Length: 169
Image (cartoon, rainbow, N blue to C red; front, side, top):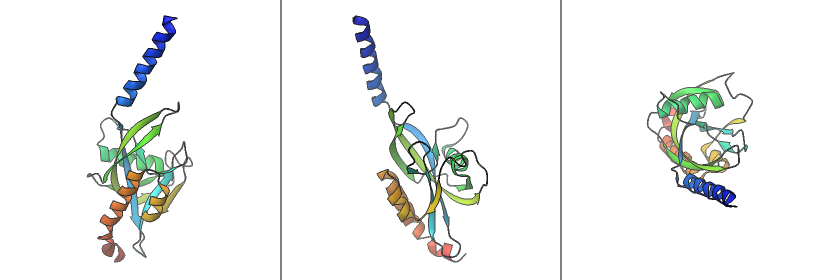
């Protein structure tokens, strides 16, 4: 009888350790463009492969790559977009990552703006997600994470000062 209790005690200890761990780090790209005719700012949203919720391209750290480089690579692999990524992060948001076994792991995502200059016809996850260019206001309605909504609104405010330049193209 002590063996099952020992196993349960070990599982309980493992679960406690898991919840005490710091959030896992990810890097994301807030992909954007301005419409040539109107100067309107648009951001790229895509659906996640597992839950179908609206997200931005993000991924885990990669050996030998800086965080902003990871963000740019994820944008290409997941959404087929290339462009210039900023080296300074826009900010951070948190969300619970649901693993394949159903367990939720807290993740902290550092977000880098990426101005899109190229759309690829073929990329790694083509056909696995729905991609849509939307206004910042529409993006805020679609994403579930409150901190990501705030980042998008902050980005929109920062870009508003540059919009007159975008309209003269």
